Length: 88
Image (cartoon, rainbow, N blue to C red; front, side, top):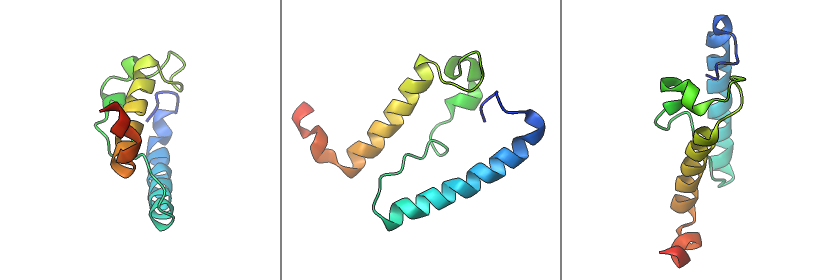
């Protein structure tokens, strides 16, 4: 959870995020759409929030966006490996 959101409501944010995550995963499977599941990734965000979140507690830092990019690239490589065959 981003530090921006009040801790007293974290249970609600977690519940709602989980519900939406399952809905997005289901829709992406139904329509063969790539889904980047940052929730299931090794979670550096909660382990070291100052590294991954900007001082406003909502936006990401350079390291946060780099993590997001790497996770997105993993999904794209798995789903469409031919896109990367030129680089290897």
